[in-house]
Image 1 (cartoon, rainbow, N blue to C red):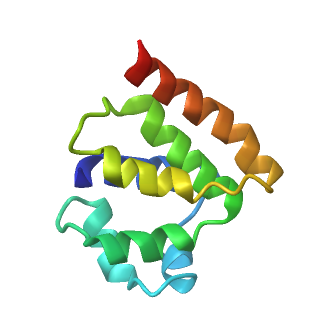
Image 2 (cartoon, helix red, strand yellow; image 1 turned 180 degrees about the vertical axis):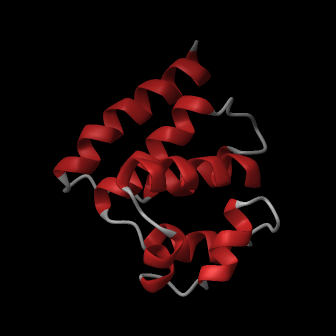
Image 3 (spheres, helix red, strand yellow; image 1 turned 90 degrees about the horizontal axis):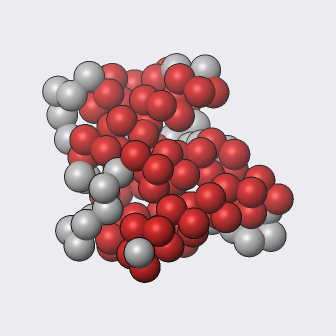
Length: 113
């Protein structure tokens, strides 16, 4: 599961021009820890992943979640983690609502088809 999160972090950081330094400054995760994770030299525990995820702004969080649902072949092992991320979408946030529709459509297709 770590690989898809690594891929999603890299995609989100690329999409929004975020550097490891920026992510580190906005979270409790060290710049070295972020770099090691992004380069595939370490894995993150759920609390570290969550701390880094919380450093994203609402649009970045929504992009991250949307990216995972679009590229990942969701299976029984990943559902819990994915659902926790989907819960992070705020229905009162316009940006999140935009991405929530895409996320739910992908989940609907994968689970109800």
